[in-house]
Length: 271
Length: 267
Image 1 (tube, rainbow over the protein chains, first blue to last red):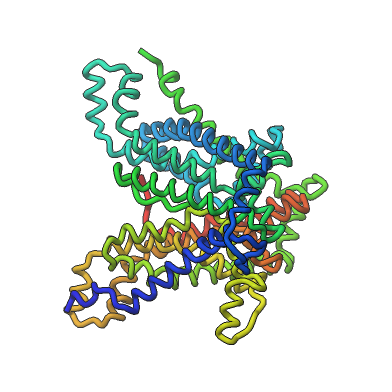
Image 2: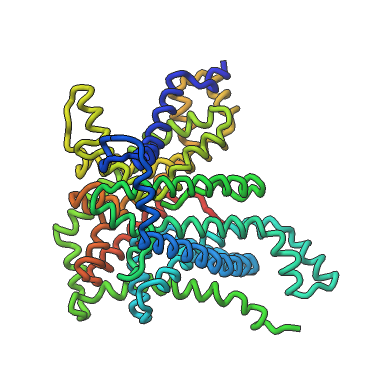
């Protein structure tokens, strides 16, 4: 009797099938039409790699890709460093109240809508006199990636037994030694997960970058947006096929990181 | 050995980040909301916000966000429920999550092709005899694409809370003679309400504020709070008014978080 509920009926299978179809159809639709020799997204004329060739000859676009990668790597690196320090600070706070308020402040940027982050950072950079461009984009990517690094590292710190540190101290390790020889090795999986999340946040961000990027500087998301506003161009399809492959690669890497380390939960993207 | 100051020096970058990028921006937005477009201190933005134009926009923004959240929930709950019953459920869950990693703009762009006048959706409609319709730049396309984008975010928390559900409770309900519907209404749903709440939270707030979707998919028919902020900041360049709308969006956001956060999420 009770096992009746745990079987999956053909009807439910169909439902799941439809959901998966709806989720993946648009993505494959994009990829398929990237091979279209025609110029539209509704009439498949024949197979060609024309759009890919055009993509690789577009130096402006290649520079934008390079910008995006540089911003992502730099911002992930710096936000990981600051985030780890932040997680250590939160972990070492003695009073529970201090800990909780630090954590709440940490989470403000995670729950804030991108538009608000973008708009407020625009005001901030303008008031601080920072020219909009590479540095403003880099700074804001660092800023919105820090909290996610903290959230990835903190559970690892919590897991660590405090006796480990006491033991190291008793055996004569200096604070620096404790940090580099005991704490950092223990939380390394969390650090990697944090770095990885920061990387993908930066790659994917559109709204914040859109606000704080000036005229001369652009990232891939901003570029796709301005292309898409002009209408269909199968360049974007070719680009999206490549990005899709790249994303799959990231997913596989992330899957292995989480499988090996059991970092808390699966990372779903913010938006 | 070391004094307290140098020992705590490592916190400096993080604390600096909190001050500069968390606290300062909020106050700057609040500060700017008190300036009119010429840079004079005034409450004119707040007066403007309470005129019918902006109130209507706020209400319609809420309405769209509500529709998007409701439809996402309607699709996501059964999906999450069925997923927990599959073999290899973690793998299937991963497959649900993968599309959420694809750049949002590319997904929106895909729908420009699918919903276009000669697009795949219209060919299908023609095939089943309804005939071509204007799909793009309608309310329908906006809600559909938003739901499409938000579904993974809604499924994940619901899946997690369903997964934690103790199956013996269902057996107990069954043994005590509850019908399937009663079991769902009185046992399963109340026990997974936390997942539903956090799912609604992660969908509702972005649904109020996404501006690229309204621009790309809804033409300029749908104006959400996010679109209005973007418009004021980057097009009209009336930062005061933009900040005022942002202040209200922040207030709404805090309110939603209080409503949906019953369980303390402490450290």
